Amino acid sequence: MVKATVKVFLSGFFKDHDFADDEDIFASGYANSLFVMQLIAMVEKEFLITVEDEDLDFDNFRSVDAIECFVASKNAVPVTT
Image 1 (cartoon, one colour):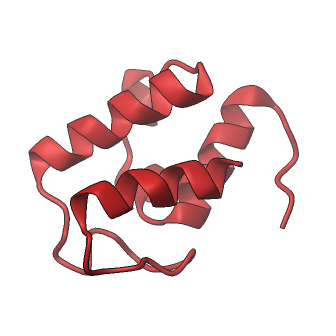
Image 2 (cartoon, helix red, strand yellow):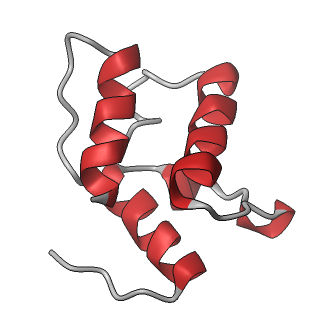
């Protein structure tokens, strides 16, 4: 569910690019600071979590897989593949 939600969000911004689960969103040159803030807001809203200051590490949001792991860690729910 997390991966699908994140991919739908990404497709709204990057219509001509389908991100692989492990693809680095930032290294691809697709992300800017406004996008990162929108991504964080979506993660908080969709997954009912709070992204704390100490969570603001690019590694937590670098890929679809990383976001899934981050959400799982905040919810203490095991990641399923």
